[in-house]
Image (cartoon, rainbow, N blue to C red):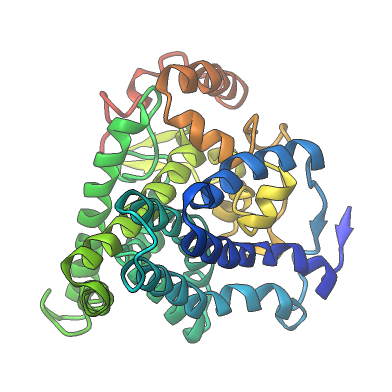
Length: 374
């Protein structure tokens, strides 16, 4: 089924704006209201996913960019919204005395849930575009969570090396999240730095050249921290860093889910097959796709990285592996490794049997302990 773009069809993708009053209510009232954002993100959206079912309709991928104004607008508006959320929450925490320290911490954790699940996700959409303004907005969304290097790593490393040992973001088969998280946090910074230094070297420039984007990544995040300091001193800086950490955690939980156990065929001499929809987990749960602007159609994103989110195509179980639940419930499951393995390892094995029936020994592909040649 092919859908046509329109304002009304775009409107559900604006549901992320509901987080703004949620943060305001949490900070104003405190108490049980502090839990509003996490309750909505993981519980309410999961229940709504189950009630509303799957969205399998596709928009025509040849739709002209000018017809997608109302889809693009929400991502381009989010930077000022996110800045207001971050500093507004800090002001509520430090310029009033009605919140206890635990309530202040929970408020900033809620902010991090929003900046991670929405902000970094929108940044991901924006940095893939050719428009310089969108790239700028995406980069600064990442910088506001101290994760600017994600732009370099995602564009130049992850998309090129997905499903291979050279991609730190691909979760290895049987690797639990608590081993994945520190590995990817270090690996992404390292690979992003290496790729940017290599890009400078190709242009005959040293690593310390002013065109190295790490100046913006680090300097921009320091500027955000400086504003936090003006609001509430070093404690406010630590709160800003707490929301950044929560945003990173949100992102990496999703990264863990998106590629867990899926690998590309090694062709020998360090070469791999082309990326196909079968190399990313797909999900068609309606409400989560509205909230995360079709991020769950990740199979098509890696197959066609230049497609804007409303044009991403859904794949059925014949073309791409399917997650049993939407991202909110899947990311919660990832935090309980025994449950995660029971939920996902058999699905990985079935995927291997279906797409690579000729491979009998998967030991070399279980990259956590036995990496393939680089």
